[in-house]
Length: 434
Ligand SMILES: NC(=O)c1ccc[n+]([C@@H]2O[C@H](COP(=O)([O-])OP(=O)(O)OC[C@H]3O[C@@H](n4cnc5c(N)ncnc54)[C@H](OP(=O)(O)O)[C@@H]3O)[C@@H](O)[C@H]2O)c1
Image 1 (cartoon, helix red, strand yellow):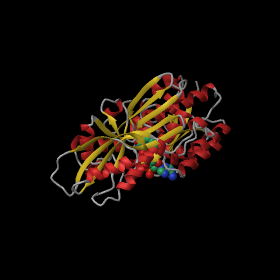
Image 2: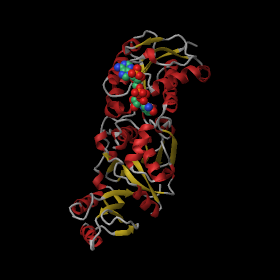
Image 3: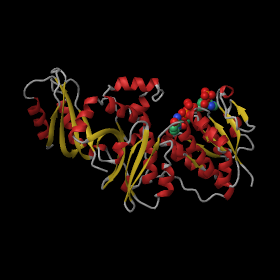
């Protein structure tokens, strides 16, 4: 059977990972497909400096991505450059040239996936983006195929490996956020500019894509309430453990009777919950369906080889389709807002909360905080205080019974003006066991 030809643009972590698998695993891939998946062209800004897999056959090497997109033999273009500018130009040009596209680009697909898919369908080409969320976990295939017969009611994920690594190291060793971040940067687990990871924006792009797939709703990243992990201290884990919980950066999409509530934020999770066991740079997604109930997916969220597998598997899926003829394509992104799943403000969410205060110790503090909570009709569940020497910066915790995010925000805003506080109170929702 005739081979299908691939052109790869971008030979960084993901591009070289995919290329290595395509070269080293070529015979087994051909056996699985019934035809060969051949790499015809590769492109990178500094292609001449790249160490290529020895088993790679003859291939066009270029610094100009248009050489790949316009190559007469290339059937599928893999966009593995990243960012939203050049990557979009590559995908647009491939679409115009009627070449199918595989991409790992979460940022671009979260921002304009809907429009990109629409153009791909009009051009009669296929588009695959498995590697864009949770590198090594085939979560797109799960939501688009595996459990597509179900009606998803909630999705929770740990979608950013860097944040999870930092949180689990603070938990394990008790170091400060800054010192663990510093180490992670030296080890190459965190970028020099860590903001996308630790402030939640990378996870937000991923949740925007997963929520669109799970609920068929048009989600824009700004629909998602986002808060990072910079304020988490070792003492928060000590208090969380006293409450039989841990802390993770949780990406949540939950259906409520009034609409969909979306958030990326640090939250307390019961230690008995399967997501609480996700350590280090691993990712996980937990999905609840109306019919099939709970399913859980776990694996490496990034890295050259796990993400490379996702890219190669997408190339195989698209190549099969090119060989077998195209089924009718349906975009995974919705084109309009659907009433029942329409995003609604986070302020409507109801949850128990963990409130952590750092205070200069003096009499009457608890009474003043309790007065504010009572004025918002918030009931205290427990007060926790670990003994410390430093009376000028004493951390303690109040947990409260389920209330709305709006009431908590009002209470926090009022408390923040109290002069004994070292910093504004930190509020985190306490998730129920999943
Ligand atoms: N890293 C992961 O584990 C991971 C996981 C999931 C998804 N992703 C996504 O995968 C994509 C790639 O990530 P990455 O980590 O592989 O990035 P990376 O290591 O920075 O690699 C990007 C590559 O693109 C090339 N490039 C940049 N601009 C170019 C241009 N104008 N023309 C041709 N080549 C160009 C670079 O060339 P030179 O090297 O020659 O300068 C580099 O090889 C991103 O969308 C990312 O979000 C990454």
